[in-house]
Image 1 (spheres, rainbow, N blue to C red):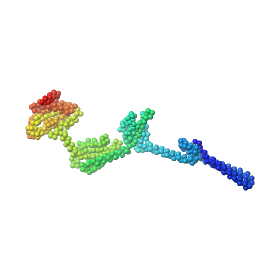
Image 2 (image 1 turned 180 degrees about the vertical axis):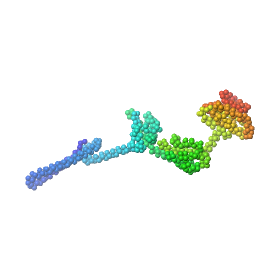
Image 3 (image 1 turned 135 degrees about the horizontal axis):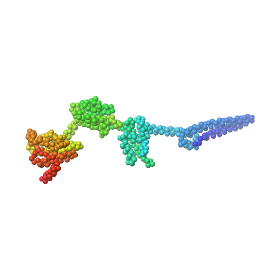
Image 4 (image 1 turned 45 degrees about the vertical axis):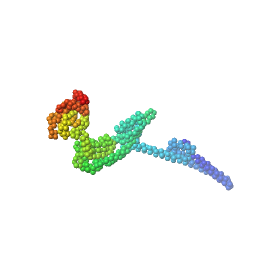
Length: 556
């Protein structure tokens, strides 16, 4: 740009010359009018001219020095601003700004430059303090951009050791992240957002939110996104959730024993000591054994080991639904009697996969358990003889299928049971059935379960048939007990049985084997016209006889 020349100096020069010219002319006229000597004019006019010239030279020198200083200042100003900024000077006074215009322009540019500098510093501070990690993945490169936030907050430098986001994602988060990236590449989704963990040294899990999208340029696809630290928000949520769980436990306590465990400190805190005293006669946490095992000495020995294994590996609870365990066992109450209790324990606070806090509840369920047992007993056992019902026997029998053992079914039917009832009365008939049940239980051959199929038929389910213990040996051991009349209710009664046995099998269920024994029994009773102790073991010939018997029965 052309350096400006101060145009205001030109009028000054003209005024100086005009002033001295007028002054000289006036003085000369005055001298001549006064009749002065010509010799005086001869020296006065040159002296006056010299004074005018000297004053003009001094003025010019002064203004030139001012101009030089102005030009130097102008050069400095131009060097302080960019070319784009100084282009604005061209619009001022035709490219020759006055000092006032230049000063005003400098102030404006300085203010703008100051604001721009502040903006840069602010942006830099925001980037440095940001909790976001910007990442990108392409076919041939990966990149990470982050500020000092992570080092300032966690003291980690893991991010400086890699440029690939996949290297710092936890093992649990990687599968979900890879699926999300794959979906983006295949066009299934445009963006994704997942929560997960970053694994940073020393083995610290930081809860983060990972977002990403895909961009395509020149036929090249790149996945870009950011990672945001949500550890603090997660911990706050966990704390609030912990308080909510505690409130639920406390609101529905109903006299239950409540306690809290500080796992890192290995410390238990009683939340309602009065309930503990009411149930167990204990009211202080000193009553614990010091190893997070509530009322250990009061627990029935049969339940102690299982109780410890299930309840006090707290970190194992993290894989349980809602991080809660429920266990039922027996414990001594204040009276010294063993009662049934239900023990619940739930993780209320965890951090980085480790349990921090657990809340527990011990409830007295003795009456409830008694009702359950009573209802279950009535459903599973015959109320008269105490033997298993057919449905309960089926359930227990089929549970042994996976063991691969040979098994069989033996049926015993009381001959002429209706006659016994009519002849001796129903009470005696009931006594006969009880006597038969006891005899079967006391004379089992091998491993068996005794049940009652109907009013006068009993089932012996053999769970391990072998060369020594099989359906025939079972029958042969029972029959001698009824070879002679037996005394029942003080009465001598002749009891005879018809018996049958199924085939032996390792893969047939209860129903299949029962059907075989039932068919053999029906054929046996048809053949036992004299009502003696007799039996048949199932085979294919019996199947033919049963079909014939069935046809004969249908034709009648």
